[in-house]
Length: 199
Image 1 (tube, rainbow, N blue to C red):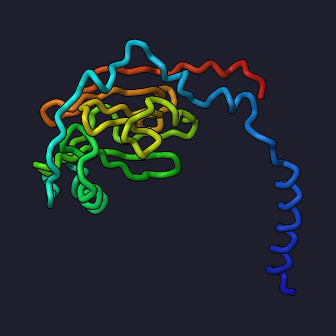
Image 2 (image 1 turned 90 degrees about the horizontal axis):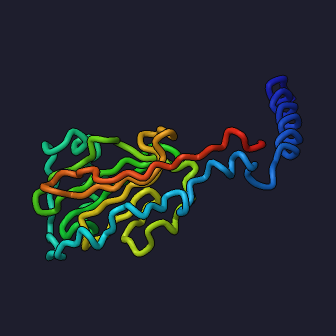
């Protein structure tokens, strides 16, 4: 055995017992405290999907993408073109599209299937959900992504998690689509006090 192989074998022998003994049964109380749940996001003052109902419209057979409508349209044209072929899932004739930007991170946009315009928010570009455990928040929506809640018959879009990976801004952000613009109308911030929780 050459010296390089010997070194690798010794390293493996050292790492294996350390990793085996270092395993935990689950998250510590301090880690558990950081998880954001449905209860953390509940807000009696938050708008409801039923307040922003829209009529469903016929499906656009061959929607096209307006690459000049938004700076991200060209950068993410492949994923956006793929998404719009799936048809509307939001506000009658729009498509909410989202794609990964790292571990537990997603970027998103809304595309008008009639105009091809790509619409984003001015508040943040992405959302992360490392400590998000709220699959049961706002049930009955068409969302197939952990950080987004929307319906085909409503112009309300709810984005949950950490905007631009900023844990200090964790919460639920409520946007309404008006005039091909996403307008923030309500925010539910999550305030967790985990500093005094024992590790």
